[in-house]
Image (tube, rainbow, N blue to C red; front, top):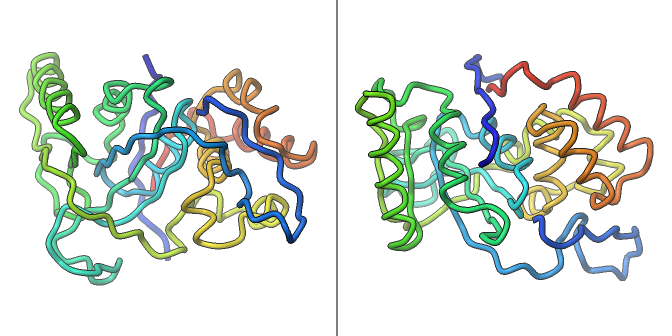
Length: 248
C-alpha cells in the first residue's frame, strides 16, 4: 500500500515501469526531457484542496507517469485562476496500473486533504473525485463508504464523471520545482508544456517538496538521468523538506 504524506495548510503566495531516457541537448532530438518510453497509462483526477500540494504528492509516487494541475468539475468554458467559475482545482494524473492501483491513489487522496473532508468549503478547494470509467466509479464509491465507516464521519466528497480538464496557467505547473530555477535550467524543463507532460518534472517536483522516501529516491535516481550535481541538489532538498508537510 502506498505511503501517506500529510498536507499542511498555509496561505498561497503570488512507472515508472520503464526507465526515463537520458536525453542530450541535441537539437535534433525531438523527445522532451524526462519523457518515458511508451507506457499504457490510465487517468485519475482528484480535487483535494490547493493543487500545488497534490501535484508534489502524486508526482513522487512510484507508478505515476506524469501529472498536471488545472480546473475541472464545473460548466464554465475556458476557466482561469482569476475567473474559475464553478470549477475546482484538480490534479490530473496519468498512472501505470501495473505498478500502482487506482485504490492506492485513493488511499493518498483520503489521507492528504489540505482542507477537511467533513467541513464545507468553496468549490475551488472542495473534495472531488472525477471518475474516468465505471470501474473507477465503483472503486471510488466503495472506498468512500469504507473510509466513512472507519472514521465514523460523513464526507462531503463529490464523486462525478469526468468531462473536461482545463490545464492551469504555466506558473502553477510543478510549482515547487519552479522555485528552483537552476534545477529547471540544468534539466531542460524550461517550458509550461514540458512541465505538464514530462515524467521527470513530476518526479523532481515531488522529491524537492519532500514527498517520497530517501530509499525510494535512491532507487529511482539511476532512472532520472541527472548529473551528479543535480542529484545532490535534489537529495539535499528532499532530506530538508521531509516530514515538514506538503502545503500551499
